[in-house]
Length: 160
Image (cartoon, rainbow, N blue to C red; front, side):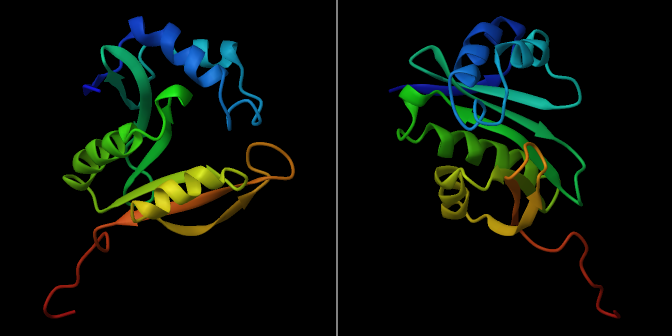
């Protein structure tokens, strides 16, 4: 399988909406196609957005926000269910980490507490759970804040 990563383009909207509307955790969290269409009919504002293509077809997506808690925030990373477990999520995450860690020392992500697969995925890639944010998206669940770091946001000088 040949893959490549490129910036999101509005022409990707249909494939992205279909991918997100048909998969969890988004369905469980109450997101439907109209929610995704509103976000992706143009390039999402205030975010860097990327797609990963496999054999010329959109197979995944990532949205990245800058300037979150002395780092950046990975708002969304999704891989088409039929393309999962083929290394595309790891490839897309590594690409994002290269971009982020060239600028800042922390990358944050939230994962739903019921999404064990995503929690394991990020833990395998060096993310540590910081703590839960209860009842953040839907009642009775929590979003788990996770962080990967390459060091403190500030370093001490020799006198400090």
